[in-house]
Length: 50
Image (cartoon, rainbow, N blue to C red; front, side, top):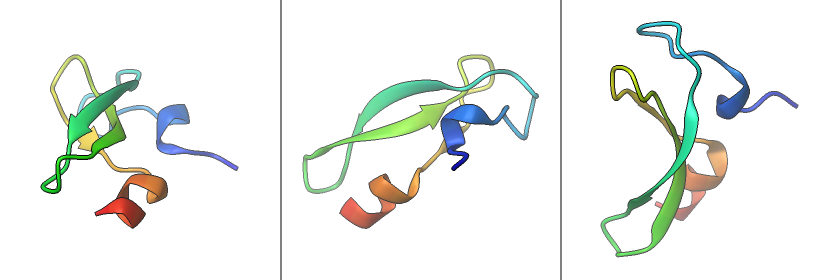
């Protein structure tokens, strides 16, 4: 199964990296983030926690 981490950024076509961000509940969520333009992509597992 392809995940957000396997795909390039849709804004600038660069490789995405895993990063941790805090949710509104204070939990840490793993998201795919573009180090070039800062776009974030939320895997299904992160959305289930929100």
